[in-house]
Image 1 (cartoon, helix red, strand yellow):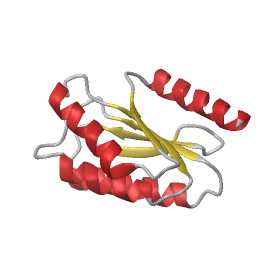
Image 2: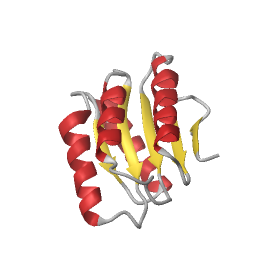
Image 3: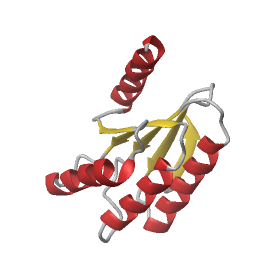
Image 4: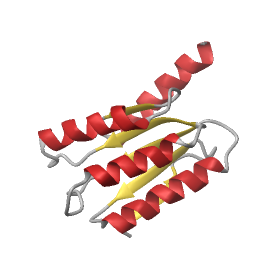
Length: 134
């Protein structure tokens, strides 16, 4: 499966997207599944986008812009944590970061890059701890 979406926990609070040798249509299908699944929940949902492979061919920016806008419309999504390919060139990562912060997240959302699934889960749990104290 090139783009797989599944719950990362039994409580259905973290959606994980695994992108493996994907095409842009498969990417958009996965994002739509995230929007649908998260929208069906009444509680906070965080999203981990795990992309260990090279990006799909072509300019990624229109695709990122579109997906961030879709995700931003889902008000119960709090964090979007991306684990990019280590082969992702630095300037592409910087552009993606600009898209995430410029087009994205509604005022309740946070978008970050991390280096591993363990770090993604840790950052989500830290943010949940802060939210519980507030």
